[in-house]
Image 1 (tube, helix red, strand yellow):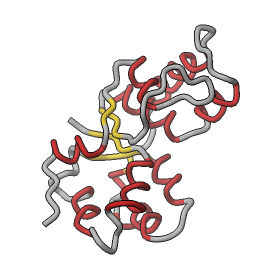
Image 2 (cartoon, rainbow, N blue to C red):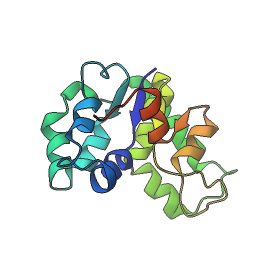
Image 3 (cartoon, helix red, strand yellow):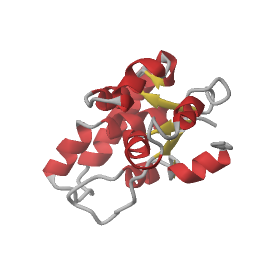
Image 4 (tube, helix red, strand yellow):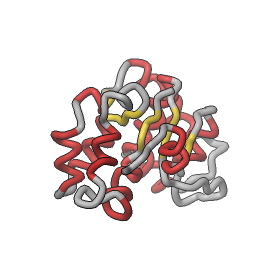
Length: 163
């Protein structure tokens, strides 16, 4: 099973608990040969991370191999259309600003890729099904039967060991 990592997974890890200086093994593990078939992300996440500066932007732009970042495919584009119809549907109660923000985000493309490829999403976002001001990744995933998991559960399942 391949897990697609959301940008906040990388950003929080770099900022809060796995800085490049203190835990370089974490970043090496993410892109190691052993994990290549199990961990990935998408080009839109790389681009979002790349807007910043520092170690994480450098890692995304150069250290992480190009094939770690999945490009959109025809199936991704088809799934994105379905996801867009869901977000803008009359039975949704989202404010227009929430819909606009979601459709312009890498979250939208991450979920579409997961839908198209049958992958699991890894994010620090928390479900907020009653929210009208934002569309949360776990809620959109749930609507399409896409598994959405928290990072530390995935790290443990994949056998991360920082020694």
